[in-house]
Length: 291
Length: 218
Image (tube, rainbow over all chains, first blue to last red):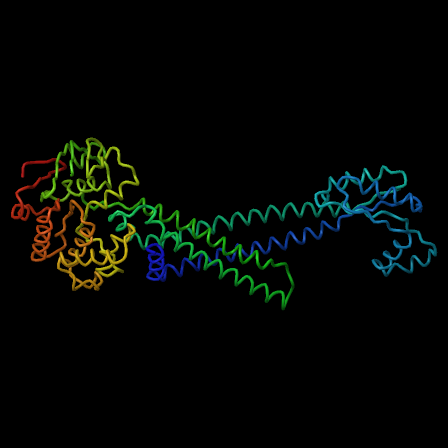
């Protein structure tokens, strides 16, 4: 009871510093939340791009159903292959017409279907890097029925390069935002603790244990952090609603963001208040200007 | 009860704040610690409530030894002694009553017993009628009375007073000393630091005089 009452009294009677602490924690968490949502969406885009990575194994001739089944099973059994789809000459032509509608006159001029049948091979996520794609391609090319193997080598290289840069940038940004949040929040909470240094002094004077001295400050820090987390989650959700309604829809895991922001707020509040009250308590001494 | 044996304490090289001090305070004693500013009076009191520790020698208080006391035992020691200061150290945002009750609440005491103890302590210093006032609305003398009530509410065996009349007018000072004498009469030992040698002589014949960290004949 004493701890709860003192925590609430501390928050109420130091209204301005409490308000500033919640405000700064809210801003830090909000920035971090934006970063998280950005990261989720960035990885979503990367994932979608990776799913487009595929190998086209062109056949030298039309295969019988048995031959096709046998070869398809062999390719599917290879490490890293997710799926294998047979594309007949007719299907290839249809796809070509859809993808390149302006070139149909060219095909009509030829009269016959020049497109070869092929296997469209999709790969597991871990096998979409340039090295792995090349490795699987070489293995696929070994089969005698397969004449040529193609994959977008240059764009897979570019994608891989882009993913590496984005990942590095994202991690760096996360570390910078994370550390600066902890630093700023810890120092802000420290101001609220220093404002109540005399209370700590009196508590020590009358024989309060270190646990009793710290508990109200830690509880106050948790309350501040929880409130800041809830407000930042609320604002992120409003922004998501607004942007997806009027501009562009993006991925927003609502429950994870709300729970994550509140938990991060509690963690920030705990770390900030614990370190501040501990160091302030250690600083308290009854030294007078003259001995 | 309080035993100080051959204590030396230094805060900087080649200079002792306290040099070879021995002193004992027993139940019912009223001891004055006199000396000019900077003579080591506050340092000696801080050694007793173990805010600092001696470089040499030993301090023994209520069974706790300065050489062996654990960090978590210091609050237990402080609960057995009362301490008052020149600047009162009252919490501005708490009433007189709340300030006194605070000393019990921080150690988990609450309820009707707290109220009884607080009212008794306030009555002892004659401040019952000002219990709902905030410290900044009462005089310096009254603030010191509130601080004394807070120090007494745990019924300590000794009251350490560090220049308790330093911020109070002469009339108020005499009243504080009279209250300390009353407390002493009921069995609580008093160790009072003051630079006012005359006041010490008038009140008690048991005084220790410090000059530059050494005990000298008063």
